[in-house]
Amino acid sequence: MLVLRTTAGMTNAAFAKAVAKFLAALRYRRRGKALEYLRVNEWRHGVQHTHLLLRVADLSREHVRGAAENARLATTLSKIRSEEGVARYIVKDVRRTEERAELAPASFKGKLYTTTRNFLSAPMDRLWKSLREVARTRRGQSPAAAAGPRGRANA
Image 1 (spheres, rainbow, N blue to C red):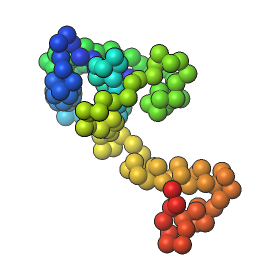
Image 2 (cartoon, rainbow, N blue to C red):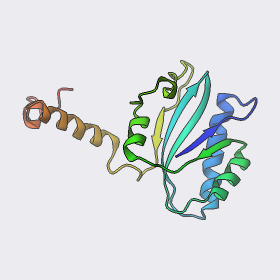
Image 3 (cartoon, rainbow, N blue to C red):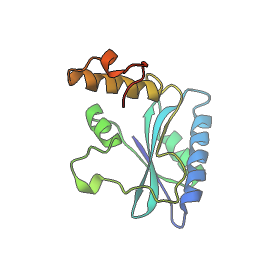
């Protein structure tokens, strides 16, 4: 897990540009190797920061440090100890209130999370559809019955 934070005096708009610069610099340092990630934007005390869940086998701290210096960002890189813990954190199912992030400001027009093309096992809409089908099956309703008369899910 990689956390990108603003440096002194950086606005949220400047931070967004710096994150894009960081990702470009990291791709360059990896010399064309794939860089797959899930990116989550959060705010704490009105200041934006970004979490990157990276699917990379050979990422070095030097690559991260160099890309961060290039983009003028502060970083924290840590290994994942629990896949379940990361999943809970990403969907904000955290037990301690101090770990909960603030809502995005009304002025934010971007996406709260993004993924690279091959990070997820299937497109997001298909994953959500399969989760809805699992939930309906657990409630005792067959997926076909839940689809309704036109084959559309009644969600």
